[in-house]
Length: 191
Image (cartoon, rainbow, N blue to C red; front, side):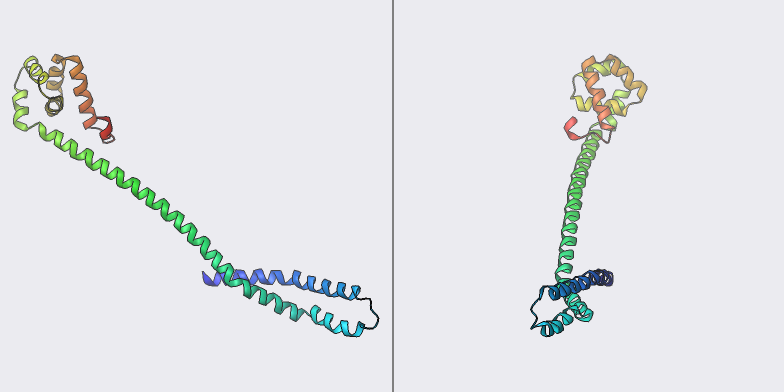
């Protein structure tokens, strides 16, 4: 990469040499035209010839390019560093978002597992053997999350019979809890 930069700088400097040489020649010839004193034409001619000499102009241009090479490189490095810092900040922001989502998902998973543990297998067996109207009356008196966990562990046929016998508002809340428990996109804020 460093050789690419040096190559580009040299080609840029070479591209500047031709206009600089022309400028030096024009400046030299205009200096000759402005000098109208008859006594000093011989003395002015060697100085202007030295200014118009392409070797001197190339040396000046080469010196100019050499002088600006380090500041130009430093400026490029500074711009690259700023770009890398912007990219790093963007990556850090995305990592923070991902960490937040991971924590939210972990919390959701823990709450879901706790929810399912509430419906103990023995308790489910009890409700499985009850008549739907008796099970509905019993579940109406329990905590809504426990009722939802038990209904969720029953077969769909038994669950539907029990929910048909439950209070409609409580059955709607149980339905929302069960659907939220099975939806991985559910946030803890919506429950």
